[in-house]
Image (cartoon, rainbow, N blue to C red; front, side):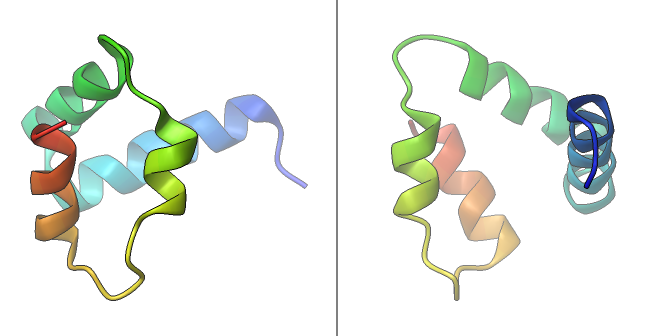
Length: 61
């Protein structure tokens, strides 16, 4: 089982690998601002959605 710190580090690595540094920073900023229910958003993610579509949906929230 990974520690919380390891999970956070892995999250950043995965986001950077798939989105690039700039978009990763934008995504993190988006989920940290304003009223946003990250848990509800995760529950509504379609398993067949592409990473690009997922990124776009996060930006529009």
